Length: 384
Image (cartoon, rainbow, N blue to C red):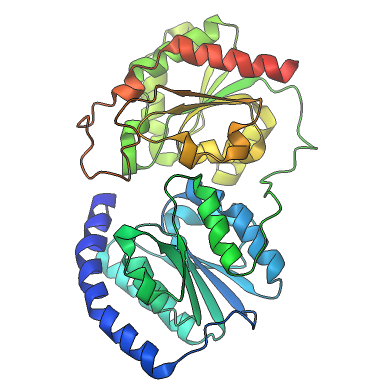
């Protein structure tokens, strides 16, 4: 199913189901008087995260803290196939329950399978890492977990009655702090940073500039346009950078190739298209081995590069780094961000219809020279 279809399903079906379940849950709560104290550790911890590998990466410090607090509990991810490959790479989860959202029928069928699995396993806790979804809140209810943790704020106030433990989702702090606050409510202390790959065995003679201009369909307005990318690649080569790499998923392969073919013939050989060339894990390892810096918009590769400690130029427009980039990343000397801080930003996640009607001038007005200057700064910092 397309993202818009999923959002409509969550909105209309979710609202109806929440209205039906609220009085039932309230009544059962009064009748059963279940003890939801956290005295006894769980045998299994369920994590619901359907979309967004980048945001899953933001939760890794919290997930690591949960594993250390409850070492005997199996950590299980409930998510879609789109997040599975990246989640397996993290080596934090012991088990995966995959929801097939390719069609409504398959969504129902795979969801029932997960519910039956949950019925056969007792002493579970469930953490719903989705921020806005109504259906995942109900899904958490049907895991029949003794304790159910989720985010609460005005738009999802119903969670105060459907979950047993809610954390206020603060839109004005870095997102990772909200994930950390949720696991801290469960007794886990977040005091260690998750590392994606150990850097001690990585080479120092890295030779390519990685460019990421891919993101989910949730907000394509985060992307640079083709002219910006073409100008950027040509200027990078003029500035002495001999090798460029374009990142992407397999479905970005044709788009990247079309862009490369628009470059002058003598330039095309200096640009590699990694979209679809490597598996997810292999692509990350290739970056770790060869990338001396990354230029990226706000999407999952930004958060991957952050965990790899790459020199990074991050480009922000309809989303803002103050809430979506960890503070420890923004304080690094090898990090630079370009953000024009236009009046209507951030707009994604906050309004149904973008104020610019899709004409993302917050990105379009960013110049090639700004990006080059930022890149030179962080590369000079790396050498100093």
